[in-house]
Length: 231
Image 1 (cartoon, helix red, strand yellow):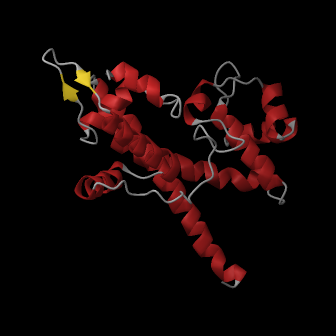
Image 2: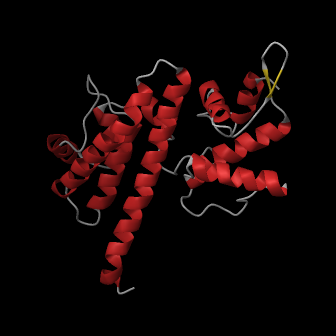
């Protein structure tokens, strides 16, 4: 199959897949399609199976490429696909989305006005205004909100049910800003390159850093609460 045919196959289950993504995974040595005499890529069904494994491991288990590469090495050595056990880190929908939340690609494209955000998130107008005043949420000019803003607002609504107010969430914004500054140092040199493969690597690195940060934060909070829970 050509790279376009492979992309059409994968997008059924991985709508975020792109040609740049497939080229990036090839550059990382995770799949090695054959080349015709003219230099065109030709993928086998085994290549497609490897790509599905990689994309599933990233989407469902948030595995970094280093770990995926090690699992593929086991697959090559034994002939058996590793990691067939059901992922336990996060519940996802058939397209990889967290139920009730937009997928990553949809998140950046989504455009909601203020009324739509209030209706879909469960926060009221006064809470939204307070979140913006505190810098927890910042609308895109000229006043649109994307999918990540919806996720933030939904999380705030859920926390509010337990008595947490917007003023309690200012620390989340400050902590996120510190992480952004730290991670930007790692991805900016790649993102500024004109090479599409380098920019794809920057996007992939950012995705992995965010996933690892989420896991670290959740684990630290669980550890901190154990004494309170008496466990």
